[in-house]
Every structure is written in C-alpha cells, then in structure tokens.
Length: 143
Image (tube, rainbow, N blue to C red; front, side, top):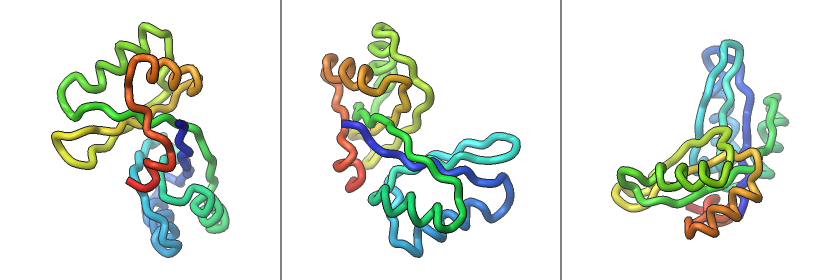
C-alpha cells in the first residue's frame, strides 16, 4: 500500500530542473506526478515515476543528490470537501501530515492525493478503517 517517491535536490539556478528532466527523458522514465518546492539555496523535486530503481540510479549517475521516500496515495472524489474528508479523519486519529500534493487524471472523477506521514503504517491502517481507497504503488506507477 506504500508508494516509493524519488526526491531530487536541485540547485536553485537556471537549468537545474531542465537537466533532471533531460536525464529522465533520455532514459525513457515516465513521470506520473511531481511536486517542486524551493528554499533559498535549493529546490526539492518530488517524483512518482514508472521505474523507481532506474530513476534513482540514472539521476545519481548524472550527479544529482537523490533519496527515496515512502509516501501514501489516497483516492478521493474530485469535488469540494474531498480533501477535508481525509483531513478530518487524520486529525481525529492524531495522524500528522508532513506534506502532500495531488493530481487529477480526469476532471470530475477521482483525485489522488500523495501524503507524506510521520507514521505511514498507522496512517494506512486508519485510512483503510475509514473506508478510504489507498492506491498501491504498482497501480500508481502505471496510471
């Protein structure tokens, strides 16, 4: 039920993101979803890709600092209140969300929210107990 995410640390300068995406393109790696956050000195590119191990290797070989992180993907209706329904349960169960990002495959259907929890096992148990759909990594990599 967990998903492996690749985090890439990028220098905060022109061309850094292009270099990373070029390496992925040249190695035929498909990005399923991504998030880019920045600080003063560097950015963190978070990726869900079709081939985690290959991505980890080719980016490291290209000189990037890369790490793998466990995240949890949860499917919710693409409508007002979809995210809130999850947050309400997580708050009641004292589950901390470190960060999240989302994507919609087709508008009006379901959204997939990627969560980073401080305790992913507990979060998955709580989400399943409350009848939320937790998307397995293998399914997400193929979306």
